[in-house]
Image (cartoon, rainbow over all chains, first blue to last red; front, top):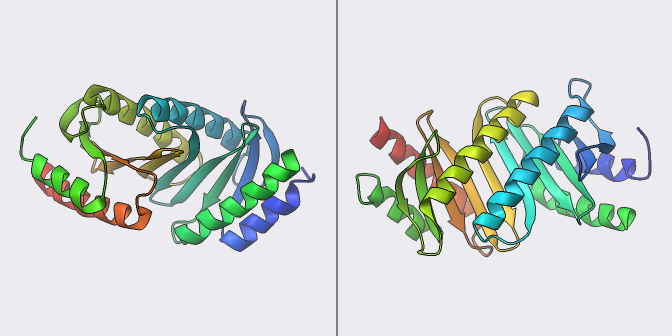
Length: 119
Length: 119
């Protein structure tokens, strides 16, 4: 899928040393993605919507305000989902040797761009 | 609830600048906690078990290996859940001005101690 978000996603993958990323609608449908062939776009999208919805409940129950980001760390790397306004979710896959500080910084940069592009 | 885990939890809260933390069984029941009065122990515990169970599925689906940690960032702070072997889950609440690097480092230290205490 190539569209106006593609360039921002490609830059994010390149600059952050990520494996791939996907922009998903709040109801879990893919908008745009840069993913390795082994990863199914629909699957990441659905997973992202599900985990964000539960994390939102956790956040509310524990008085942590509006949900901004969920990061999941596994033995083989990271999956990070970040809200883009109330409009979409950005999911990023990264290897376990990724520099977390750089990754989070580049995600914030991409979010700002995507907010403009979605707005 | 005071027990052998209490001291480790208290040290974590103190050293990491956290608001509180809770040690939870994998089925979502509280084992030990250091929490502010405004936070319900049973609620954090149940939330922790639910989010980890879903995150585990996300991780498996996206080939990220064994689940190690889930962090949820809200506008008013962080909630971080970390597995302690296959035996328990450590949940930590932190304010939004917490230093994330310090927080994650102190959590790893506490996890090592808790693994010994649970083993």
